[in-house]
Image (tube, rainbow, N blue to C red):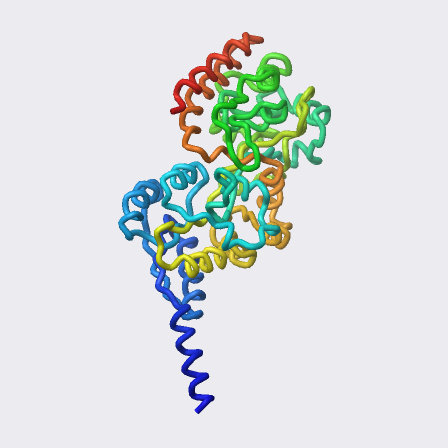
Length: 392
């Protein structure tokens, strides 16, 4: 009799812990197949996962509209940090600190990206940043210092070839230089961004603009009119030794048959810190109105585990934020190279105010390289004044 009661009790406990959860995702192809496999694994624990495909750009607004009504998903897989602040401010995503008891395996840049006002609002899944991609035929050994970089860049410049190219007008792409000199978008204090403290026109930002200007007019490395596509075309043709790009270009580089390497950009001359590029991170979030938060959190943790991120990389080539997964992929030059840049990087601000930054800042960066030695202070001060005026 006691044995029968024990079995009945265990069965009831199993039913009590089981849950039906709904997952919204924008994944497709092999990545959606991966998610379905993860759901099947979770189902074996007595749960039921329903996966609903929602277009990437529709997820945030649909979540804000549906969550307070008790509708929508339990889990969102995945969203980038630039929507996290909006969703957290709207109160529709759940703080994750109480569910994620150990964070040691996550890249700190990934955790910073998913932290809003000091709280973790998503479990990071994968990340991307720019890094220095080089042609090993022209650059046998990755340059570690500015002197080494300049020497090899100048040696490969001329006669239709280029030693180094980047889109000098692209604020996102060149943030690593701005950060190295002490510039920043919003001051970050313990995971809280102060949108009234803008560092895009401080002394360091001025010096960074001077360095970007020097790449064109002093060192004669980057001609006018160079875009990301122009640089990629020259690299894939074997006419470019080094350029800044992200994982999104690696498929074309591999198809071109270039023997490539990936490393971080060296510390610019006169910089007070190391090159630290912007890092974009996507993570898994939980609906704050979910009635199955514990099960949702368990699923989110499962798909963010080291083994799951390793399988996710195999499915779609994304760069894991799990440090142990990266270690297992250490022989993959894309993961190793961009992983190093991501760890050295700065999480792109995740607050809604970032929307007021891009246009004025990008215009200022572009203006700073249109002629030799313009008035950087005046250009950047004007941009920051506009940004401050646009932040509500």
